[in-house]
Image (tube, rainbow over all chains, first blue to last red; front, side, top):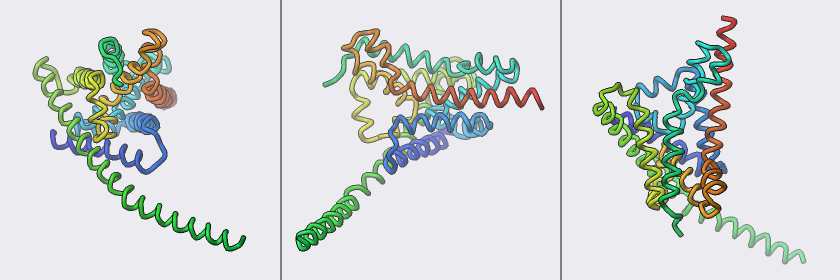
Length: 115
Length: 159
C-alpha cells in the first residue's frame, strides 16, 4: 500500500507539473481541472477503485476533493432525489473544508507575512 | 533600404536561432527536473499521508476509510503551519506541484492569501481573501458534483 501510495500520488503530481510547465495554464487552472476530473471519475465510480489501490496516493491529491463532493451528492441523490444533491454535497468534504478554514485562519492570526 | 531590411531579417534569424538554442539548453532540463521533483515530492507527501492514515486508524481504532478525515485535517494543519513559518515556499520552489496538488497545496493557497492581505484587516483581508485561490477549486468541484448528482437523481426517476 505504501509503494502504491508513493507512485500513484507521485504520478498525479507529476501530471500537474508537466501540464504546468508545458502549457500556459496556471496552477489554479490545473487544480480546478483536477478537481473536476476527480468529480467525474467519482461520479462514474472509478475514483474509489483508485483509492482502494493507492490509499493516500489517491485521497490526498486535490482530485480527491472532487470525488468526495460527487460521492456525497450521489449518495443523497439516491435516497432523497434532487434535494439530496443539495444536502449531500458537503457531507464527505466537511472535515477538510472546516479544517482548512480553521487552521488557515489561526495560522493567519499567529504569523505575519514574510518579506 | 533593401540591404538594411535583409540585414535585420538576417539578424532576426540569428536571434531566433540563438533563442532556440538557449531554450533547448535551458528550457528542457528544468522541465525534466521539475517533473522528477514533482513525482518524488508528491510521492513522499502521499507516503507520509499513508503513514498518518495508518496511525489514526490504529490510534482511534477505526477503519482506514474513516481515518481519511483526520488524515486530511492533519495534512492541512501541516501545510498551513509550514506556510506560516515560511518553509512551504522553500519546499515548493523545488517540489512544485509535488506539494501543490496534495491538500497541503490547498492549505498553502489559503494561508498565503490570508497572510498576504492581513494588513487589510481580519474581515476584508484575512476573511474574504482566504479563498482567493481555493475558491475556484471549490466552485468547480461543487458545480461538477452538482451535475453528477442531478444526472443520478434524474436517472433514478426513470430507471
